[in-house]
Length: 180
Image (cartoon, rainbow, N blue to C red; front, side, top):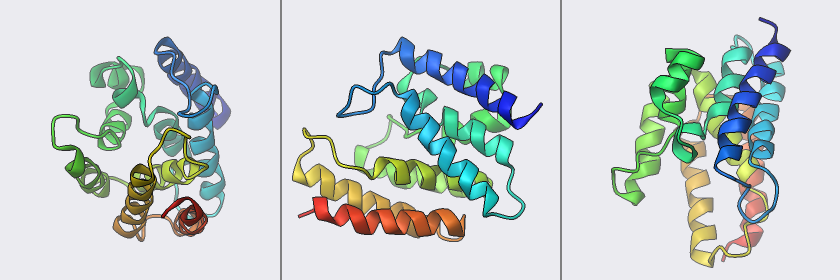
């Protein structure tokens, strides 16, 4: 299947699932699919800068990365619609709600590190796209914590994708203006 067809099939599936939940980008009225397409765009550009990169796999994971966490979609449904490898990647990118909140990021990053560098790239791309102007309802504490998590992601996934690491490092630096 051509890359364009893979992208279209995946984004349609993800858009329906997130729209069914009336999900928007926090602090905006934009449909959540805009965030998903921004993460995929980071992956597409990174794939052009990265040798031996499974672009089709990474795009699918990018477009689906929040589907288990934010929708009613199950792991089995995802595996049936796409495949087991994609479902496992999305599961690794999904925070485990059954453990303490302060342990979730570390747990997810540890699971991500056991998978291919494309999964690492999706996590980096996700945080790149999320490091924008914080929603107005975020406290200073939440903004500072988000910055701290971005540094944790960058440090933990070092060596995963040089291009995206550089992009994330720049975004982290720019995000400092919102921190106190």
